[in-house]
Image 1: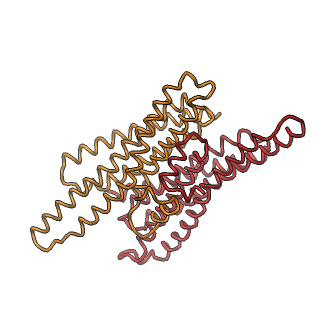
Image 2: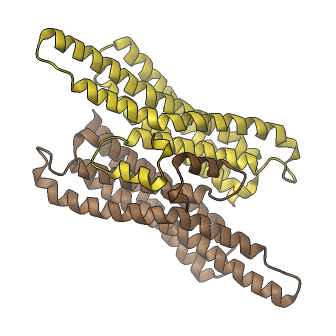
Image 3: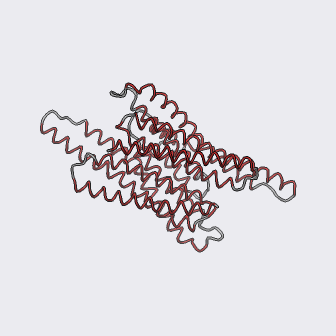
Length: 208
Length: 208
């Protein structure tokens, strides 16, 4: 599994001449780093002098971010697995009409999976940035740049995963699935732009 | 060393209640992922049918990106080391006037180091996105979303590292150093905004 690779090993695998792991797994890791940074700031707030009033709130956010981190960590491998399954579907035999039909169905199914995985990455990255909003406002000011970095990583994670969703949507024949995914994606991108701007503005104001 | 940790182990360390590794190391890793994705696209272009004319160009970019990846990988650990050195300087004795003077000098020196490291991360991330520009235009179109993700990761890496530069600049007394760093940083942020927009526009147009 990729998550058991060293950072060095993972980076070398990304850079290698194999298309996976690629942008999808990298986007999930970016989101996971955002969740980890947010959770760290909660931990650095809980129990600190001057932050007694937000202790329970921060404990809740910490638990939520640990959950997002766990989910995004799994998505690193899921994205590469989905990509490899899609590549295998393309390799299926296509000599007879029956084979062609089987192959075509397998490609459609594998493409849907290669959409659902980065779509889930988008959802999780959006949750991460939404959790960063109150943490930037009320968390330990000494760690304010870490909340900022968390938002940047979550935003890059969502935007990168969204590219992977879109490129695969192009070959989907199920119009209902396609339009449902498209509208969710547009909504999430809009929310990400709004919330990340809000978080980064808070971070900027607290850095001065 | 952090780069010998597994992805899971690194994420757990970031999320822990220790302030390092934090946003600085995460930003360097983000930049390294950008470099790795860019290098991958070069490798997936070289030797492919239809891309014969750009082979030499792509080989050059690949080598450059491998260099940036290597440098950014080292910066992951350097950032955490610089942060820990700064924390140790704060712990120096401050009972006598002599001790206070020694401590103050040590803090100033360690703060400069904690600025120089993320500043170098910014420089490398900018190089990554500059290399992504011709790769987005002329590289393998099948990997276009990976170039897009590379640009997103390099941008998030620079923006995150820039926050770490700025927060530490606040306590620098050497005005010449401060103003030199500030103007380089503003220039790099401007360049990143321009070049990343150009790359992402190219990616978007090729995804259609």
